[in-house]
Image (cartoon, helix red, strand yellow):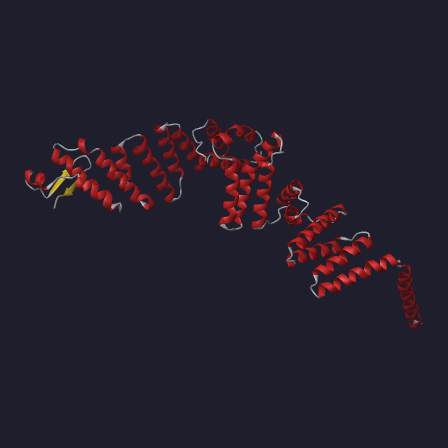
Length: 419
């Protein structure tokens, strides 16, 4: 009984297979045959031949499913990579661009390939910059990974559309806004992916062609600010990016920069925000307020090197902007770390600048230059030390003052050797 059941089942299965074979149309048979030939060519790594068979199969089959389209697209890409003739390579690129369109129409396009597709569009004879741009944007939105060439192409394509004489005033404004925002996002991508310096240089070259000065960015800033993201971290990022841009272009004295500083302090009262406020006050020549704010930032700093940098910023205001040489000297002498030598040189300059007002006699006043020389030498600036030493007391001066071995300088609370 069991044997009869098995034989009956086998007969039914065989009948079904035979029936299916009989139901296969000549078109379906030819479709399979073309795909089979394509597979055989792939075994031989004859990508051009495989591409030809896939294209015939696609036409005969009336389109493919996703798996077969993926195989065809990859085969075309391999064909392009292996082709050395420039004209044939371009023809294959054009064919691939058209194939991508059909894949998308069939609903099988994978957005992970958006940047790849955009790259081929920009290399084809059927150049469509807007379509390429849409695909690059799609790729960033889907979180796909960019390579270095794609980063440069994306930004260059955007720049070219902005620069096109046919671009309307409205579109130009929109492209300019994107060139600024994408510069920051793509720069971060380059840094995070540890791409080459050349990639960043390419972006910066195009960017600086569009944004050369304050006049190129300030008129548009209010519009940019009106569309800030609402999410706090995203908003902080955009505002900080614009602040960096305005600093690089020398716009820190503008009301727009002040607006950015006010915005960042409202949403992120961090040490960076306080430092930005201090820099703004300095740019507006509010030096006393700037020093107060820098000291506030110094109190917030947890890193020793950052504290030292802030101290040096305060010193620069005291010395360069306020001409407060006695105060600057005291600040300079308290600075350590990587800024120590620069601070010592400023201290030397302070001593030299006030030499004529420090000391009861001409001889004493000249001795200030010996102390300035000593500080400059400690700072590692031998030429400055030599200049100051030359302004110090001569042999005749020393003889006339009983050849003292040292002199006390009451202004600085030190003694200098005359030996």
